[in-house]
Amino acid sequence: MSSSSDEHFEPKTSFSPPDTVPITSEEPSKKRAGGCRFWTVFASLCMVMFLSALDSTVITIALPTISRSLDSNEYTWIVNGYALSCSVFLLVVGQLADFFDRKATVLGCVFLFAAGSALCGAAQSMGMMISGRVIQGIGGGGIAVMAEIVCSDMVPLQDRSKYLGLLLALASLGTVVGPPIGGGIIAHTTWRWIFYINLPLAGFAFAFLVLGLERRTPGLEVSTLSLRAKLQRIDWAGNALFAGSATALLLGLLTGGTEHPWGSANVVLPLVLGVAGLGVFRWHEGSGRAAWPVMPPRLFDNRTALALHALACFVVLMLTWQSYFLPVYFQAVLRESPERSSVLLLPTVLAPLPLSVAGGVLMAALQRVREIHMAAAAILAVGFGVFSLFDGGTGLALRVVMQVVASAGVGLLVATILPALQAQLPERDVAAVTALFSFSRSLGGIWGVTIPSVIFNARVNHGLASVRDEAVRRLLEDGGAYARASASFVGSLGGETRDEVIGLYVDSLRVVWYVAVGFCGAAFLLACFEKRIEINSGQK
Image (cartoon, rainbow, N blue to C red; front, side):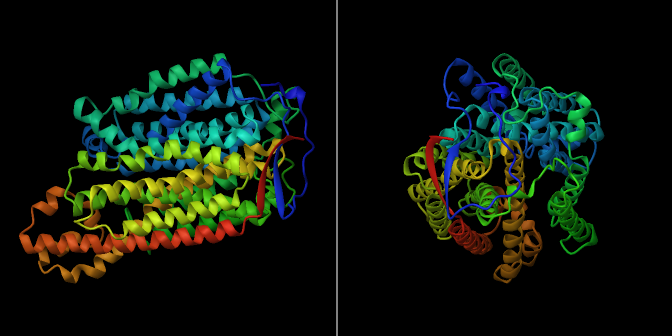
């Protein structure tokens, strides 16, 4: 790793890529992955990346227990508070990483995550819990973007896909294994250890980052600026517009269909304000009012960048889709226990990790990005298409193989999108484009629950006539089928009614998978719109 004095890049005021964009690294050739310092820092980044993703879902099973303990029914905001704060501060974290050094920024994020965890673990009221989750989320979201930025600083562009693929696969793993880990903790000890367990792990990572990470702000000559001058460079108006608009948009998405009907003013108004606010934010960033805009227009002023950000959203959407609705099949159709369902989901949980690394290696070897993305979308379509054939008689081998197939598509996308985005821009834009990439992913995580849930609930309501027992129909309507997707509920029904309910679940899940295949087709078309990006290991 080299100091910032070794490199300087002139800002690009406009960007219009040729039909073929060679991926080249602008950093000095001395940037190499390897050595004790590198692996110390990288392992620490992997640990905190995993923890930040884990905490987005680890509390889901514990919510009723926490709600009873704190004597409050506002438990949904334990989830929503973390999700919102994780997402809305991503861009300002990227700008802080540019105007202050990377080391201070990443350590600050780890500290906030640990402090929020401690506050949650010690919470004596729901207000204290939600406050802790917001602080934890600011740190967790910052960790996600800073881990990718620091990794990009340490690794040459032509090798980044391998290491970024591992980081992002660990984030996906943390999200998927969160519920069973949380369930295991509350089964053997108090729910407070869901949060306290973060403290020693984050503490170890913090210490190793202090020892291993150099002070560095690549590509920007800001080290000699005063604190006041650095603060003046931050796009405060742009960050405020983005945070407010993103909060409104995500608030509508998170509460729609759960706390409020989709057509209610409580959902529609935040969505409208959020979209309008993001439009104003986009105008502000391109107007020249900000000398150092937090989201320069050059980050997404071409079709390839737009396609790649959409694919970043898509890959998380598909992984979340699969992770939330395969367990519905396992528990309601196969009538497996939650513990057994977690075991059956292991191919989805574990396969993306090695396959993401393999995707990064493939990107470097084949020197093609567009073709890899097209193949990934096609592979995902095959996986989700076969999911639509699953019923009570589907064998274990097919269930395992098709989860691995779908995970292969995820792995190919996870490892290759961010390096392709970074390749089109000067090294000085790494932090900004990485922060925007992280926000695209966060949208995918939210939509990955919302979209299939709406489809599933609508299909269940449409097919309820096939269930003759009126009392059971009332239990299943308007979201009840998802809430009651368990072996205990299905097993409690009489013979004919049980078969009718299982058939309803199979039919409704089939439509969910059909729509997922449609999304895969859209992703394939998006990949076709990418300009050809060739990997070039040479240095500028």
